[in-house]
Length: 333
Image 1 (cartoon, rainbow, N blue to C red):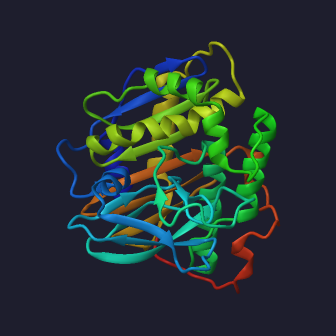
Image 2: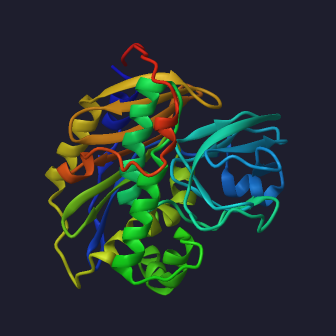
Image 3: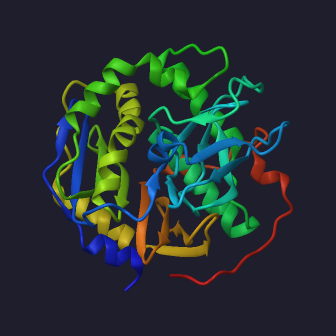
C-alpha cells in the first residue's frame, strides 16, 4: 500500500461546517502530540528561520531559507511570503532541515514591484487562493516531470491574480495578491471564525457552491490546527468571488469518492527540495502534490481540475519555458 493510500485510508470524513457558500468537511484521524518540526510561523516567531532574496539582486523564482534552529521547519505549498523585493508563494511543500540554508522554489504574487520593502520576508497568514494554487500545482508537476525543476508558469500565476482583481474590483498599485485579501479581510475572518478546527482533525475537504475544491491532509493534528485559518482564507476568497447566500454542501459520499480517487491516483516521487520525497500527483482531472518525510505523509494537497483549468499555460514570460527540456522517467509510487 502506498504512503498516500495508507494515510487517506486512516481518515474519516465528518459532518461539514458551512458558512454561506463554503463548506468544510473535517477529516478525522492523524497523529496527536507535537510534530517533530515547526511550522513557518512558529519558526519566524522564534527567530530561528530567516527568508531573504538569494542575493542583493534577487531572483524571481528562488528565495533563500536559513534555518538556524534545532528542528526542521515545514513550509507548505502556496504559503505567502511578504516583503523583500516582491511577495512570493511556495511552489510546493518543503521540510527545511535544521541548521542549514537552502534555496526554495517560489512564484511571484506581486507583479508591479521589484524593489526592497524589507530585507526579510514575513508570514501574514495567507495562502494562494485555491483556483490559482491548483493551476500552479499542475504546472509544477509538469516541470518536475519534463525539466527536473520545481518552477511554475509565472505568467499563468499573474493571469489568475489579475483576473481575480478584476472580478472582485480590487485596485492594487503593484498588482499584489495581498491587496485582494486585505480589501476583503472582515468577510474572510467571518469564514475563518465559522471553520474552527476540531479535536482530532488532520485534514479537510473544501467545497464552494456545492463543488469540491481542495483537499488538505497533514500527518499531525497540531499542524492542521495551526494552518487551517490560512487555508480557509485561501478558499474563502474564491467563495467571495462566487458569493451566494446559502448553498447546500455536497453529500458526504461525494467527498469519500474524491478521497478514494486521490488515494488510487499515480504519485511520482522526486527528491524533495529539503528533507524527504516530493510526490507529484499525475492523474486525469486531478492536480496536487505531497511531501513524505520522517516516515509519514507530512502534507498532501489535491485539487479537482475542470476542463478549462487544464488548458495550455499562458505564455507570458513563465519561467518553465526558459529552460532546455530534459526527460525524466522516475519510478512511480
